[in-house]
Image (tube, rainbow over all chains, first blue to last red; front, side, top):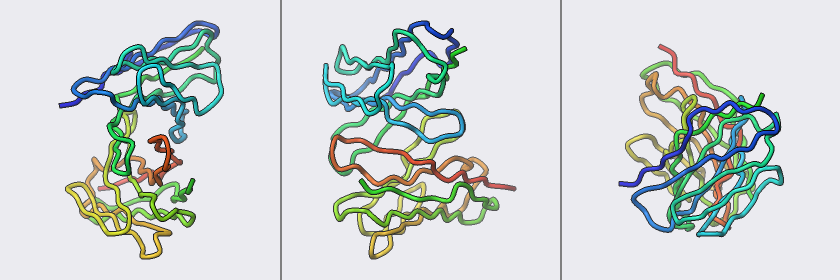
Length: 114
Length: 110
């Protein structure tokens, strides 16, 4: 069966520090991969998605970046965190970009930038 | 891309049916309606999706109006564990993306 691993579960970082969040998927090949962010009390915002290795689409311009060095690995990074980067970060995967595509989410990382 | 409108919050008594409405008046003919839910501090969970016909699975039923401008998610016998934020989403046609709105916060009360 397919599983998605996302870590760490919680993270507290000072303003201006770098960030690296990692997500890996097991049990499937060539998944579509997504990074979402959820600010406190708000809906999910799509940040990045990837349909293959090295293929990254950015939805919202910001100081975050994403990379996909391997088929089932998706990394969210920042060189210098801002206070506004605080939030709940969720990685998700799916197979098939057709109409019956379903997203499966990881357990999330709660990031607090202080 | 079609947008959705949902009430921000709803209450439901435990054991009763929870009916969650969603308006998507600008939906295109080949766009699907998806429902996800998010329990506090967890990742969203897929519930159900449909195009035109009503759909039912082990979690819920989805009723889509004939003109497809609105839909209702039905949890037939709500339990306390169904307390969550429920998102109605119209599938973006290109790129495999799902765009989440603000959702409806459902509180199931004993």
